[in-house]
Amino acid sequence: MKKMIALVLVCILLLGCTAQAAPSVQKDETVELVVFAAASLTETLTEIAEAYKAVAPNVTLVFSFDSSGTLKKQIQEGAECDLFLSAAPKQMNQLDASASAEANPDGLDFVLQGTRVNLLENKVALVVPDGNPKGVSSFDDLIARLQGSDLLLAIGNADVPVGQYTQKIFAFYGVDEAAVAQKLTYGSNVKEVAAQVFEAAADCGVIYATDAFSAKLTIVDTATKEMCGQVIYPAAVLNISKHPDEAKAFLAYLQGPEAAAIFESVGFTALSE
Image (tube, rainbow, N blue to C red; front, top):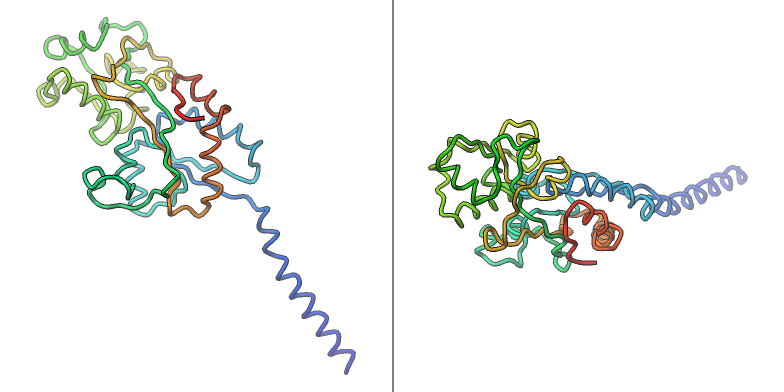
């Protein structure tokens, strides 16, 4: 009987040791890092993710690409997200408690303070399909022809950053969007706008220079800072992140020379290294 009791005690001790050792095994498990990013970052971030495997083999990057407005809304509604990369400051400001009341009217608090950076700069470009059938030559030419000749322009929706930049260009030229509505076709993100031009469903379109590069579209003009301001891409770790340390590490990698080389290969300007 004493031998039986002793055997039971040994088993209990062994089970206790095994239970205590379990957490150390979990440290080696793969971490899924959810990254919400503007659609215009699809190709570059996909390439960067491959390079990042050598840096952090235990981290699996799970991307969600869409318009910044759509992604901001999903975050606001409770979607799981560790890191957010927006195509404009507006959507990031709307999630940042440190932004002004004017920029963040709902007082939303999703940005992990101290992690927000201006990561990249892009350019707004006027693009045409192969062969440029309508001979569109510049923004000046586009604006003149929108008010006269038969022309169809593809632009982003009003809740999409590239659409908002287009609205600024219209304002710069004094164009009433409603007055030329019959000559406009819309896309819910920049990739949809680029696709309409690529397929010649539209005679021209306003997208980012980097998307023109990816879609192999011809750029006939780029907007100046006076026309639509700078096209800044902010990035930040969110305070709802389940893996803030891994998110910070990936964000730091995005600011480094390896990622910068990939971003700049398609036309982005890296703002921090």
